[in-house]
Length: 348
View 1 (cartoon, rainbow, N blue to C red):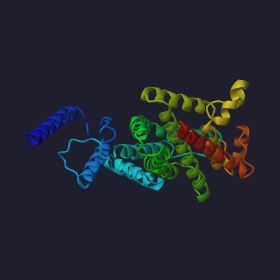
View 2 (view 1 turned 135 degrees about the horizontal axis):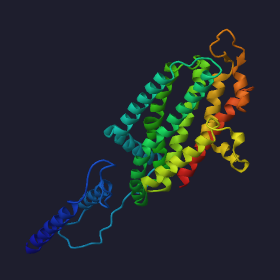
View 3 (view 1 turned 45 degrees about the vertical axis):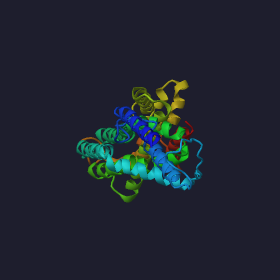
View 4 (view 1 turned 180 degrees about the vertical axis):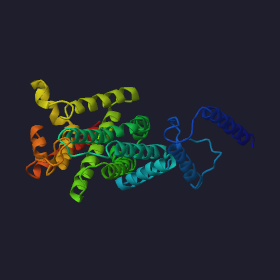
């Protein structure tokens, strides 16, 4: 009897020690909690083992033995890992809608602002051409740079992923594909679609089903590229400041080689190769072909003399437009660059 009371008192002392250790543990969401060794999954495993131990025959809780063996089924399928990780990510988005809501609100504001600024695009040789290239550049910039908002949550989630992956909770592929399927549509693609619809119908761009389709696909691919770049940078560094500088530097360099700010032919020859990895260049080429092909331009202050064709503007800017492949090769390049960054992110 005395031994039993002594063991109970020892358990009480151990529990008091655990209580003091747990006092500094922050419990909450993925973004406001610390990473503890005794997290929810580990605690659940401990309780499960104790439950199985209590169900074993010929065992007494007061026995002073530490050589009990429990059979535990550690096999798990890839589908189960993917299902539960996806479910957790969806719950995190629903429980913490601030990032999703901020993306939606910001892109609605961007769309309304773009529509108010570029709501009247005349078809003159001077201002009409200038304003159309301006709205093309602004739309692509909003799509690509808009992905930077999700960079900080990705950096914060990196520490949790490393901890759980090292602990053997799931495979890297389970986490990565679950994140792409849940986060990419909710945080990136849906806001991009809202912005695309608002800007297309509020601005004075050419309104047709074919024009809308190319406009939609190009904006979507630009947004996916911006997301893939942020994913790769977030997987490469754990410091938000460094990641932000790296992303902005890459975007700025690509902007310079888009062909909208400076003529590519006037750049030093040993730097011109950067144009082939500039997403801004490929996206702007598609939108320029979509807008200027079969477009008639007029002289300023004389709407009766509309002799200039939009194809002349494309030729002057060295943009190929004669075949269907001239459009889709740019979209294919956007897809290839985005896919490359997603693959590098997985490897990283």
